[in-house]
Image (cartoon, rainbow, N blue to C red; front, side, top):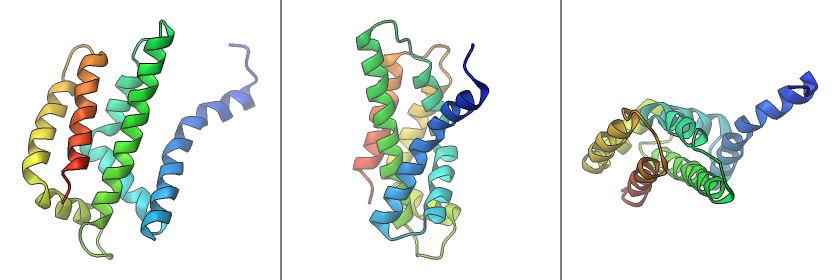
Length: 150
């Protein structure tokens, strides 16, 4: 589209910076190694299909200022919920456990709410269309997981 290739590559990589900032902040708050935090962060993203939700949010229309602002707000909420859940999962289990073991310990503590959340998130993910309404419900579900951790 007329943008120099080097600049296009750098700008295209900006989206990967946001998780790195969250990972470093979580590592500082929890006194964990950034690599250990990153492993839990991405494991959780896979298990809860957070990346797919983010893709759906990015696809929301931006026809006017309000749609753009709503899209940005829900995207920021997802990043914040993901960071908070990562911190919760990190605190589960002992300090030497793998991401899978930490998730299992966290899942056992939160089995009931996680089961309901997975059902809701799977239903939303299987929708034919994504809009602010169903993505807002997805975000509320993520925030519920965050508020009810043990």
